[in-house]
Image (cartoon, rainbow, N blue to C red; front, side, top):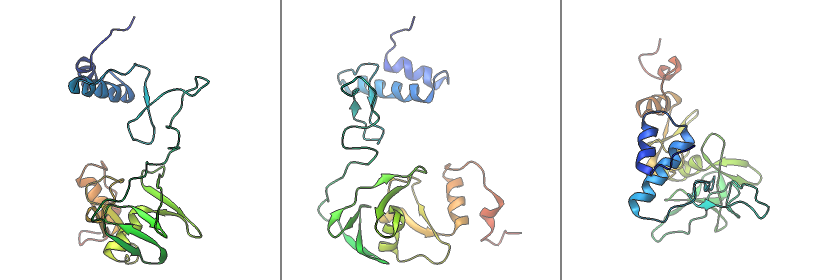
Length: 198
């Protein structure tokens, strides 16, 4: 028989390591709901898988859903904000990148999806799938030199603002990931572009 614990008690259990990752997330949501004085959601409530934190209900037949109608794995579109700067993307005359990390084609916003590895992507004919962070970096920081990658300075793959992006070598990218805790070990190839290379 399960106990009816509040958010604070569940978070204490989560910190002790006795709960699964999903249960830990639910406990944190319950704790935050209690702190803000919001109405409690039923225990069976699930949230949209696109990351928008919107509760979803089963479909008309009672089957569980992963996304809110209309999201289908896509991030919700955000309207352009005043003061947003748009620049053309080199090599793609029909694309522009914004200072907030959005992409548009012929004036219409492209709706990005999340790739399995966590980066935002947009589809483009005839080029195919394009990474948003590379398009924004090319528009605001110029085209990369051979072999360069884009580094997200704050480590957040979804934050594609130009001031969060920089071109770097693969080794610099690995060392940054290690220094910020995004990667726990470094291969020896991380030092291939420094004077410490063997």
